[in-house]
Image 1 (cartoon, helix red, strand yellow):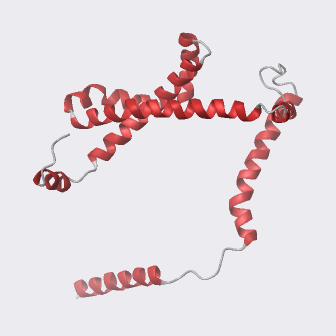
Image 2 (cartoon, helix red, strand yellow):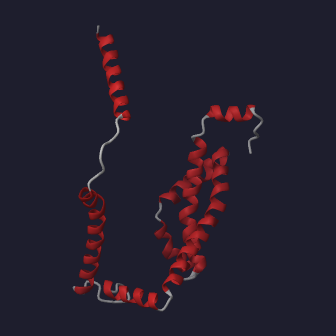
Image 3 (cartoon, one colour):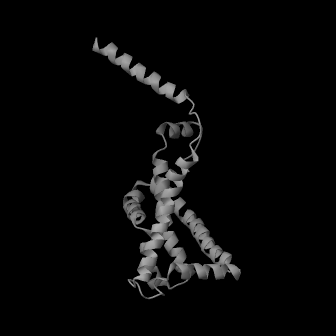
Length: 195
């Protein structure tokens, strides 16, 4: 008698779940709730960071303005760069380095990821290294890159590559590993080669 009761309970749970999927949520979220839940937390976080930043400067915890200038000083420099028409150039320099570095990382990480995913020896040899490099924050590469390469574009690209290549390769390895063997057999049946 316990088995039919359990089946009835399972069926009732399934019906309740299906009913919940069919029900349409009525009304929109009130603006006040959206502001409190979505806008207020990041705004408070930014204001808190600015307050701590200003406190570090005001109380002379960091008294060298070349190491940590005051927030208003930074804003003045940004405003002047905007008025002189240089701000967009500064932004484009950073964005173009990031985009070009990411394209290089794709060109290196994609074949590397495919090689690691398909060759067991390569996976055993460099798979753990890729995982270790992926867990290391990119900013950790900045000091060695500055020492080895100096302050130039090659240093920036090296940091971007060291941060992005392991993530791209490991992501591709995970994607290849999750392909169902049924799909692989179906592809071979239809004439697909290993490549």
